[in-house]
Length: 123
Length: 152
Image (cartoon, each protein chain N blue to C red):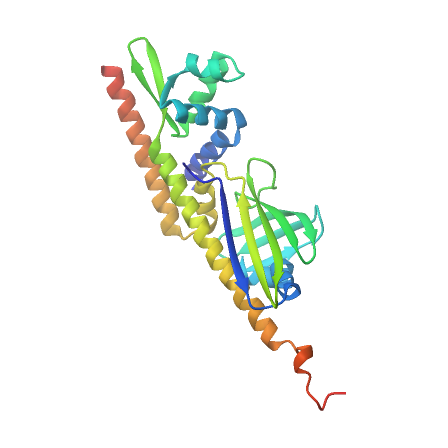
């Protein structure tokens, strides 16, 4: 349980940081890139980029492949797929919630005495 | 790309005031959203959404403009104080269309992977297990990739 919670926390922390989110965007645009390339496109140093990449890597969001002397990083599409699936589920949840709101509102409305249907015997 | 917001709407055969009450009153929120709810219905007011199975999520009311606009920010994980980076914004807008009401909801501000947390909080244990298995598999996959590229 706690190990599971740790993994989840790690993912959470990885994507909660705006620089890392930006970094993921840039990486997605490039397909793959080195820390040096990424640093060139973001207002942070190469060292900072390397640190952020390490966090993303630990969270399973990016992977690095060594090409000769350099490491090229890429976003892991499986993780984005997982996120997409999750968003689909969030949408389904809202479908259900809106349907429940509709049911509740319409049944309340039916039970409510309507001004147009005031019974004639009422004074 | 992963969408960063969910937008949905529904047309309800009830006047806007009735829909407003269902959407904002704790008694009703505890029926359509969670198993029970508490809401301090004013901007900045605290709210809590409790699921018997999963625990209590905390939320903060942002906008209350009866009967047209209501929004709150709710946090994941369960129990956490809502703040930027751990919460999403849910915005309801209600508009009268004759005797009916169009209810629109937008949920936004998803960090790409907070889904893992949400699944833990909200979905069946089976789904949670599935997610964690998947995480395990991915980890294995990464270390395999790393080992292989180190060998090249």
